[in-house]
Length: 291
Length: 323
Image 1 (cartoon, rainbow over the protein chains, first blue to last red):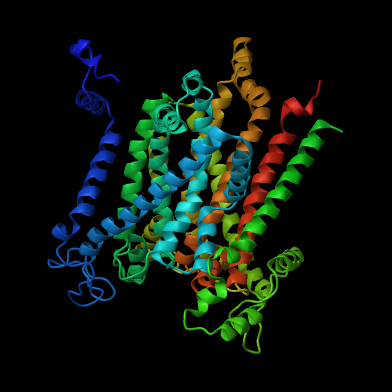
Image 2: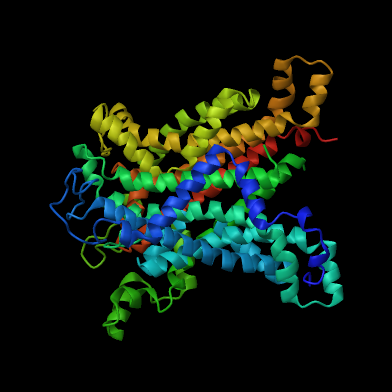
């Protein structure tokens, strides 16, 4: 559509996407920089875990419960696996699972939310009332209960958390989409006789994306913390998968002997959530101008 | 009817309705499972006869509607049925009898955390709002943003490491029993209570700060300042009457948050509360206990929010003095 008009525009008047990104990054506060660097490091660790980790994920390398040494920088766990290697593999497992869960919940909740805002009527009413009831129960409590019913497994964990989280996503995406649906440009697209899919993807989605992206960061943190909590409680990600939440639980007895082993995975979790929060906070300030 | 009374009654009705809906969800969670709960527990090798016998033993052979009304009716009278564990033996474990002392422990812990956290965070939040953009406000802001993002068990283990292992001031494990004297109970529960205080203080402070800043920005406050009312009078006569509602909401929201935090913290410190009991029951898939705990958690959550609603209605000056 714009291809014909593009050459006639004065190119200097417009910044390229790259220039825009550089300009935005230059104004980022230190906390946001800190957050972005931490997230980048975590991403590299997660993607290249097998290359970076000194030992394998489930490899027994020495005696159990060793304090840190030259061979095992952070010591070994309850059956003699290298803690540092498991921490690095944990980045891959814990972050990956949380990311997948959040994506599913956004796909599901977002679709339902936009559909409810577009169609209104019984669909909107029905789904909204059900979601209201779900919102009255804390996620952790509900997830615990559903895991007791369905049994603990990775698939169950992802499905249950994605479903519970999608109720929160539904609420937000419906509220944001409701404001967009009544806009004149949506109306004119309808009058032009555009298809529903065109209206959704060309008119509504681009306009509700900024708040949803911010929400994605916050919901990811929340899902990540809930998965870690559930794994810590022993009903989330199951051994021998290296996962930060369950690593805290596996090594918790060590702390009474003055070995800070359970603090490392817990700190890894804390650092990531703090980093994501800093970045999201910066986004919020930029997009809403709120103080 | 007085408008305040009518609104309060409306809210109470809505709360009761929510509770009903939640009880239906909690009860029917067992029915959601594709293939059925008994089949799932017994596995693929189970014969139809074993499944029937198992269902009969658990009482799952009757219709769901009948079981629901029985469950709710008994729960209202404080009877949550028998635990699945030990059901086949001669000794039936009564869920209510197991939960009662643990419920007391959990409320004890939550109350301890609330007594420290509520006044402290309201005070700090109000100070941060009144001296906005000062260095105090900035430090508090970034500190709380960090604390909010920390998982409960991280805070718990750091505190345990410092106070119980390195300094040896407190015991790392919070084991208490029915006969524990009051003050010993307090010292035993000190570390978990401190953890929960730290976790909710950040939330509460930020919300208090936001609520008060919001309030001070309203036109009637500016009007009062412009007509020359002294600063203490602005706060006392104009701001405070309208502040109760947001403050009640902040407190209720964070007390509700405490309920979730209590589960993890109890497990860390091996504190015999209802959260730890629920986690144990989830691991052994003991549904009557899980459902009873879930219902208690959800009911507390709903009631707290309802209370905040009612406080904000009955303190609303616009409703109290109708035209």
